[in-house]
Every structure is written in C-alpha cells, then in structure tokens.
Amino acid sequence: MQSGILYGIGVGPGDPELITVKGLGILQRVPVVAFPAGLHGKPGIAQQMVAQWLNPRQVQLALTFPYVQESEILTQAWQVAAQEVWQSLKLGQDVAFVSEGDVSFYSTFTYLAQTLQQLHPEVIVQTVPGICSPLAAAAVLGIPLTIRAQRLVVLPAIYTVGELEAVLEWADVVVLMKVSSVYEQVWKVLQQRGLLERSWVVERATLPEQVIYAGLRDRPNLKLPYFSLLIVQVNESVD
Image (cartoon, rainbow, N blue to C red; front, side, top):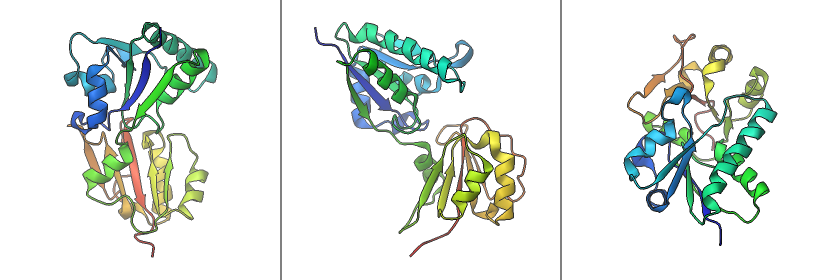
C-alpha cells in the first residue's frame, strides 16, 4: 500500500479567511488534520483558525511541540510527532498539518517533515504557502513593506542587540519577529538612532484582538504578547 501524502498548509497570520483557496481545498478533503497542540489543554492557534473549515468526520490530531531551546528535547518531540503522523500515513491516509503563517517561514512543520522523511523516506511531502506575519502586519498598517530597491531583513525571536545594530547599518527595512522578550533593549537602540517615529509594533495581526502602536517615542516599556512584531523603516526610499 502506498503511504499517504503529508501536506503542510500555511493558514495565515490569524484571520481564518486568509487561507489560500488551494490550502482550503486540501484541508477539507483530507481525512486527518494535524496541528500544534495548545497549552494547558486549550486549542492551539492554528486549530482555532481552521476549526470552521473542518467537518466532524475528519480526525483532528494535536501534536506536542515544547517551547524550549534544548535540542535533545526538541528532537525527541519531533520524532514522537512524526510517528503519530505516520500511523495515519502508513494506512494510505493523507494528512494536512496546518501552521499559522507560512510553513516555510520559521515553522515547526519543517522539523516535522524532515524528521518524518528521515524515519520513512518513502513519504511524500507537499507544501502550500501561506501569508506570513510581516506581510500581514504591513497590510494592516497600510504601508508597503518594501519599495524600489529597499533591502529587507527579517530577524527571528533570538538575536542580540549587537546583531540588530549591525543590520541597521545597511538594511532599509527591518522586521523583528516575536519582539516581546527584547523590546526594551530594541527601543533603546531605535531611540539612539532616531528611528522611533519610523517604527511600528503590531500585536496579533489580523485577529480581533489586534493592537497597533504607530510611533514608539513614548512607549519604552510596552508589555507585548508573544505574537508581536516590530517593523522599522530605516531608510524611507532607495533609488
């Protein structure tokens, strides 16, 4: 029997209507839908985003991915999750793993798919792109993320102030992902460089509880949720 296909579907930044037509079609036809488990027994973000598109006949598979940095713990979690998904795939059932944003952009899906293919090389993996949070944030701000020849840099949640300062020397637009844990240090760097008025923070882009902070001069101590990003227009335009 041929194994099922593992689909990775990016379902966008939060608004359920921002899933692609292709992603929705696959999501509604597969027998098994997997997603990262939520915390404390609550539904995860991706699960909540696709709930209205699912039908009662579909199996919903919550996979546990710990929020830690220790590689051994993460590797073990990926292996356990891969084996859980394999139980359906080996029966010839297709599985759609849904992830907020895009599945190739800082996504847990990458590790799941790679681990599964290491354990079972015969598995076919297909991905469907989604709207990632920097693009969603620019849309809700009503600004272009980049224009003309501007150079864009995206820094993930883990970076040092030194890395940020180095990037600000040559980038035209900088996006800081999940900025909450380093916001105060970032604010000081932006203040020193006179960039606070060309900076925006977006919390939970496209969700009902979305919050926008435009201009950060008087906001040195924002208490931000995990899903917050910061956009800096270092240079307004480049010819």
